[in-house]
Length: 183
Image (tube, rainbow, N blue to C red; front, side):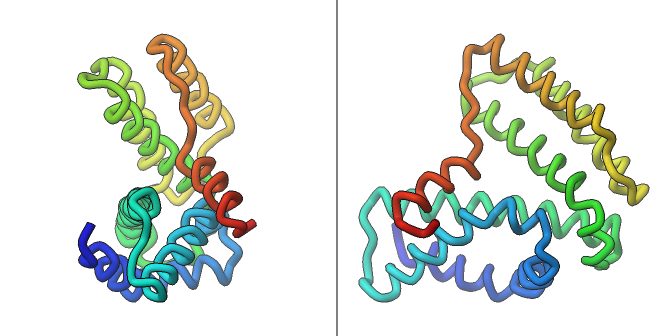
């Protein structure tokens, strides 16, 4: 891995710092969802700066974590600009619905990464839920408990049918943070 990824990360931090910091100041559930990923990235970035290199597994962890938060925050920025016209406070009021959207996107990405050709009906069911959530966000409303349960039911059915285990990246980074002594 070249140093370009670390430069990209530093640039992303600068570009996204206003949004991330504003959400952190509000103790937003959105940034709480990424807390351990941010902690691990910061730790590994600092280690890279100080020691000039990382082990291969550390590089892979950094790359995975960075691409994960980059992608997630691109989606958050789209919702913020499209639906909330840049109003972070209003976006934060619907943090649980934003997180539901991010969870839905995570499941889609996980499904795509888990099998060569995802079942079209599986993907469509997740895309349908994504569209429901986006419609709710456009109206600046909160998703119902039933929609949360629907996502759980759909994903549970998919994973059971495909005999897959889902281990969310947030949980993986919690474990990594624990191993690094960051908790």
